[in-house]
Amino acid sequence: MTYFTKEKISPCDIAGAVAEAAVHDLRVNLFSFSGFPQIHVSDPIGEVFNVTLSWNSSSESKVSFELSVSEAITAAKKFKGGNGFDRAIFDRVQSSLAELERKSR
Image (cartoon, rainbow, N blue to C red; front, side, top):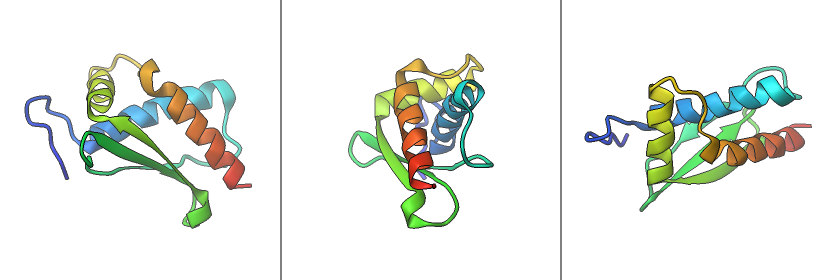
């Protein structure tokens, strides 16, 4: 697992930022599945993190999107600071959740 020592950020913090954006979407739009999707953040490949949202264990119930390292670090810092969800990543999280819901039906 990659840890950004200078920023004190790990992929777990990035997953927390994604989860916080998902919780905001849940409050506004609700989900059609009964529960909360799993969030997996890969170690960065180059300057990009791949984020996967999944529901159940079915490979058809997975959706991925990318965050640049700088976007991910900014979102994670906002999450760790308790300053609410990061609007810069929200649209990608919301779109991915909607796609995951469509795939899960």
